[in-house]
Amino acid sequence: MSDDGVLARGRPVLIETERFNLRSLKPIDASERWLGWLKDPEVVHPTNAPVRHLSREQLSRYIAGFDNNHNYLIGIFDKKSRIQVGFFYIDVDTAHDTATFNVIIGEKSWWGKSVVNEVRAPLLDYFFDRLGMAKICGGPLSRNFPAIFNYKAQGWIYEGTLQGQFKSVVDGSRLDQLRFRLFADEWRTIRQKGKPQ
Amino acid sequence: MSALAAARQLLADAIGLDDSAIPGDARIGSFERWDSLAHMRLLSAVEERLGHQLDPDDITRIESLSDIEAVLQAAGVE
Image (cartoon, rainbow over all chains, first blue to last red; front, side):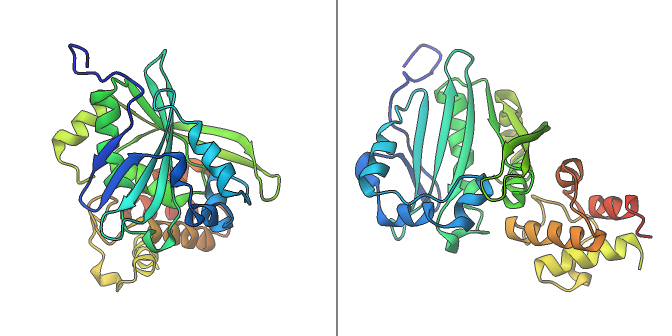
């Protein structure tokens, strides 16, 4: 750790919240449950990801590609059942101290139960305070209403819309992407105000 | 039906409450029953009411009962 409290990068993430454990995933975490999410249009299409029929080995190789430095793959595990309910994939620009957060809750039984903001709050603390990020962004599609709700409920700032940024994997139409952001001081202000998540 | 009454009804239906249970200051983050799935139902219902998809500015604008009212008013719902 440096003098200003910033951690050396490359360390796995390990965070506990009220209902969940978060940790950097390892190739051994590739599971049939996760493979099932990748095959489910309701899970993957809100992020414009295609349905994929991967093998466990292919998923393991994908997980192994994350280095906890330039990119992170962090699992969300229900404390009670120990079942993985989703994951974050986070890209970091180490030259500019910025990160882009993406999250998927694969377990539909957890949808609408405030998982994302419960687990994202301590992750934001970690990336700002421990890893020294200056700015963190999120980019939901404009039709991903639950994700947009979560950004707004957590106090993220809407920066603008990238029109027609992506081609739909479903029908080839152009999709708009919204941009939300938090600077470190904005997040600390939200924390100080005691906003719930 | 006024835009405010219509907004209150749409939010109540999305949340699964009687419209009399929707506080006038209902807002994302401070009204617990307004969760992510209710928000999805709400925006879909607003679009159905208006007969067209919301544009991204309206999608990001809606975070309170009065915002829903404003979007409906702008679309001509009196």
